[in-house]
Image (cartoon, rainbow, N blue to C red; front, side, top):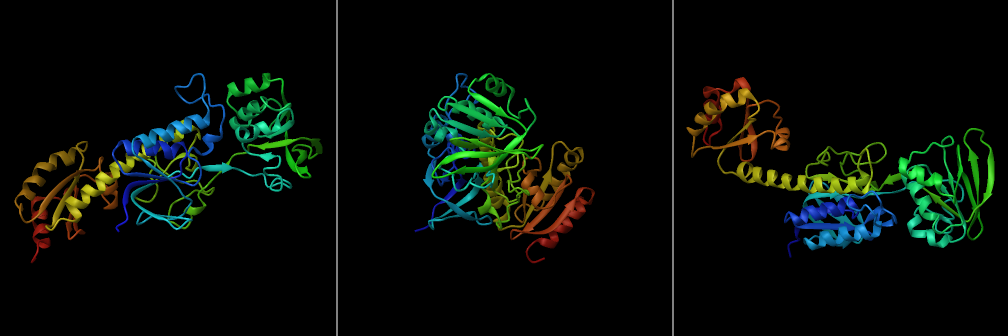
Length: 411
C-alpha cells in the first residue's frame, strides 16, 4: 500500500505548531502534527496567562492550548503521538523513535524549548524531589512551605507570584543589583507589592542540599563570593531555555551557535519547503502570541511554496517541449519595455516551444534557484534542465531566435 504523502507535517505541538495546524488544515492542506507529549508545549504548563490578546480577565495555559488543539482538529488536522528522531530533509521524510515514517511535501518544525539547567551540585539528584522548573505543575506540593525561585525575567517573577497562592513564603534570588529585574514593569510592580515575596540580590545558587527531599540551598553572592546556607523546602529554576533541536543536527538545516533554527520573516529555513516556528527559532520575543504568529506565517508560506513548486514543475520541468521562461517584474521599467518584443519573438515558435512568464517578486524562490538577479532574464529549459540563459541587454530578437534554433530537437 502506497504511503500517504501529506501536504504538511508539523513536528511539535506547542502554540506555534498548533497555529500552523489550524492555518494549514483550514486551507484544505492535508496536515499531520506529531507531538511526543500532550499538545501545548511550555504554554500548557503556565497557569495564569494575562497577556494573550482577547483575554482581558486572563486565562490559563492548559485551557488556551486545549482550545488551540480543538480548533486544529475541527478543520481536519491529524494529531498523533510520536518522538521524532531524524528527518530526511531532501525527501521530506520524518522518522520517529517507534519506527514510524511519514512523508510530506513541506515540513514545519516546532520542537520548542525546555528550561535551562544550572548544572550545580544537587540539581539533578533532587529534580522531582524539591527541584522544579514548572510552578503550575508543582505549586500545590508546597502548600504552607517555603520555596526559592531563581531568576529575574517574566517567567521567574510571574511564577513566583503564582507560588504565593500556595507557599508560606517565596524568596526570589536575583543576579542583579537590588531593585533591578528583567521582567515586564507590571509584573515587577505586582511582585514588589506582594508581602509573601522576599528578595535576595546579587546572588545565585551554588548548591542544592537535602536527604530524601530538598531541605536547603547554598546561596552565592556574585560580588563577594560569600556562601550562605538557607533552609528551604523547594527550588524553582527559571534561567532561560534550551531549544530542542538536537535531532536536527547533521540534517543540513542551519542552526545558530546555541542550536536555534535560523529563518527569515517567512519562517523559511535554508532548506526549500522546510520552516521553523516558535521558541526553537532565532527571534526577538518568545511568547505564545509570537509563536502562534510564526505558525500562521509558516503554514501560509508552505501553501504558497507548494503552489509555486508544483506549478513550475507542471508547466516547465515536466513539459515535453523546450520552454522559455521569462523572468520579469512590472516594477522594472526595462522589463516592461522589452516585454512586447520578447513575447512577439517567442510567439513565432508556438508549437515548437512553450513560453512561460514569471513575476520575480511572486516567484522569488524559483528565480533565486536559477540565479535570476536582473529583469528581464530568459531561462531556456529542455527536458527539465537549463540549456541557455539570456539577461537584460543580451535579449534581442536575434539572440532569442538563435538560442531557440540551437535548442530545438534535431538542432
